[in-house]
Figure (cartoon, rainbow, N blue to C red):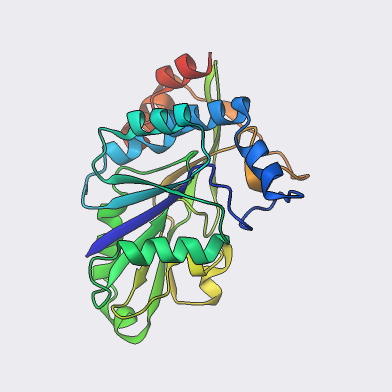
Amino acid sequence: MQVIGLCRFSYPALGGFQVEHESIEDRIAFLYQEHRLEERFKLFEAIALPCLREQTDQNFELIVVIGDSLPKRHKERLHDITADLPQVRIEAHPPKPHRPLMKEIINRARKDMKAPCLQFRHDDDDAISLDFFERLRAAVDDVPGLLRDNATVAFDWNRGYIAEMSAAGIAATDTVRNLYVAALGMYVRGGVSHTIMNFRHGIMNQHMPTVSFTDAPMWLRTHNGYNDSRQKKVKPVPVEPLSAAQEEEYRLRFAVDADQVRALFA
């Protein structure tokens, strides 16, 4: 079954952000700040990409959506750091309404609209467990009745870590949060044009059957200087530095290397 993912890398959409801007020019200026983009690249390099390289099931594709106004040097850097990932395709688009464009991009990527597919979202500052796609396929195979009776079904791995990255390494805490973007997949029946971008991730269970798993940590979500969902007043999440044993656990589960984090954020 085709597995299609979507990642927005500082794409200046019309809508789709919790932080509002007066104009699209203001949004582009905010997104393309040098300090902000440098942080996004570091997180993409150290957190979001390594877990894709090491997936136990390599049969997936990820579309990275950027703005057509992203400066040339940043486009080139993005192509350079994804060059060894044949599953990644970068698409540049002008500012357009957020959800309609994302749905169009995903449906255009489907090889056969009459065939079912699996879909996921991947934020540029989060990681998923190295067995996510393997477990997603297995979970889908376990619920044939749900697939028979529903056009869409969500699969949510809700245990993971909140983490902060710095020159000192990784500080984190474990948690259970339902319906985060990371480690959340969706089955779409053949002939159905709905996509994972039709739904706000936090309320997908209000629109379709949702199967949840809490047995193992399956995602790593970073809190950083530019989380869109954390630009307003939010309660801080206390985190603690990882021990050497925990750093090794993160490396084995997410391919996140604490030494690389220290070097990049030094």
